Length: 218
Image (cartoon, rainbow, N blue to C red; front, side):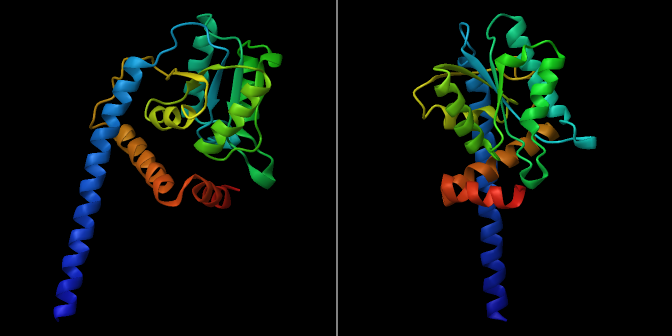
């Protein structure tokens, strides 16, 4: 009987600790989003914008989140802030279904010159997304890069990309007025995803975490 009692107490403590960690991370990450949007907009023309794939939608098309990121990148172009784009992510493995290629097709359809759009076919998560984008940028001698992704994704991306010697800025869909409220269901799910990814990287390290992601996604 005592064993069950102690087991229940331990389980309760673990659940309470997990819930506390979740709340603390969520509040901290929300403040990080707001601060990043306030301080890291591109102040001048950038060499290229890196657009991060989110997911496939119906009929193997890019999903609505990815479309918003692409439209945000087009806004950069229309405002004269860049002429070059790097599309990363969506490696379909054996299926040869690359989200990056579909993103390029959309940009070309919207009037961006195909010669100004570069894609990767290897990356499977945010870490490898940036690694492949960085390779392309170095080949082109680009040093000033804007990251185009959803607001909740940008703090982690910015942290990853800032390890390089490049000048990094951000460009989120919907502009820099962060209007999503703390109680937003979509924002809550996005932050939970960032919690899992950030915690996984912290515990497992980038290399092992990436191999696990690669195993499940390809």
